View 1 (spheres, one colour):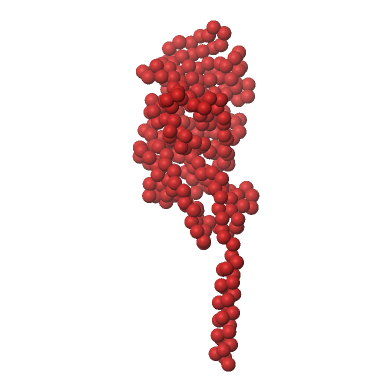
View 2: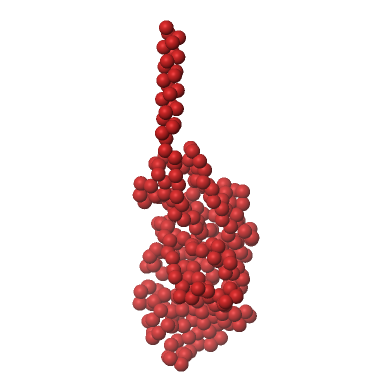
Length: 280
């Protein structure tokens, strides 16, 4: 009799476990975005990558990157709602120029989600270095880029619509001196050139101009025409000419062996400032 009771208990336990497994819902993950904070990174900089995803369960996942064979854990995470999860990763190229092969993995006890990305690592942040790396094909494959608040690490996705199909507004890249930007951005793309970048391509998809809207002095503390000129002058000076155009707007021109850089005003003094970069 004891043998039959033991067998009955084992059978009931097995049935209970089997029945529990059979009704366990499938765990589903939906990626909102997995994006870098810039199209390419200098070998001495730190690249940030933001992940946002939702899921239909509350148990923990294992989330990590594999970058050129090295496993990297997230530097921070936050949960903005019961089923939305944000993770921030920081990746240092460690003086390696070339390509960062990045693999994202999200694992639960049922399955594993993987996705890949490849981003360029360049020697430095100079205009001469970056111009040829901002080709249309590459930008189209890596855009958009996540905005990471420098103070809070909060992730934002800001999309822009360019008026010309050959143009791509890739976002704002600032040096952190404008303290009242929301989100607070400290993320340099090209040294000395700070603001909202619009890449302009010709019909053959060759980069012909970088147009940077530096901002409006009336809105941003510490932003003046002189401060923008000084930023450019630090890396590409001295200026070739400075004065006023035919409409009375201030304009300063710099020249390098390869580029013409113009700092100007869109209107009267106090109006938004711009920096335009073209090939000579």
